[in-house]
Length: 253
Ligand SMILES: Nc1ncnc2c1ncn2[C@@H]1O[C@H](COP(=O)(O)OP(=O)(O)OP(=O)(O)O)[C@@H](O)[C@H]1O
Image (cartoon, rainbow, N blue to C red; front, side, top):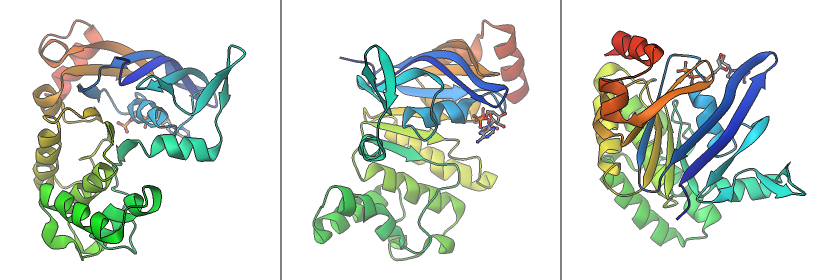
């Protein structure tokens, strides 16, 4: 079975600033992976390359064996077209820091938009499945409300329901709780915790190191565009080997 996510030689610069510097990373199918590290380390950029929201200068990403955003021809990588990239993206759930719900659609409409447009599910089937997902994240009573009428925690739970609606085998979370007031963080982590037990592969960029230790099978510590250390959560967080990891963990825990 191919790795759920395989990243090789990921390198990317903005101008003279090398944001990703030759990263190799593997996440096995069904694993929960957490990516931690200081601000500016390149965590979000790395995550965004996994569904080609950001493009690599060098290296490649495979998701379940398939090259993402590029194809190989004559030993070189060539960009795929927009339609092919969108089709790949539809198979990968993505939860953004700032929810990214459509403001003009109700919560239920947000959740069923992709199944209706991409999977051509009949309206009643999509609505039934959408309501079940909202039930699962605990906001079924908000189905007909608009995003602005919900708290940040409720909006993020709606965004998770939306990510689940296409039944992805892989879900990427980009700092899902960092835009939330502290008292709302727990309700979103509870939903992610529940997902972590279901066999879906999750990759979570997070500042919540204690949460990473609790749910992650594998933790990746990044600094200055490099992958410094990785391994089981108990090792990387409780017994870090690298001095830079030790310094970071010492500050945040
Ligand atoms: N579109 C962009 N243009 C220029 N620089 C960028 C762009 N996106 C990110 N960067 C820079 O790349 C570096 C890595 O950013 P990234 O958001 O990936 O880090 P991060 O580890 O996720 O940080 P944080 O935890 O603060 O979100 C930062 O120095 C950031 O300023």
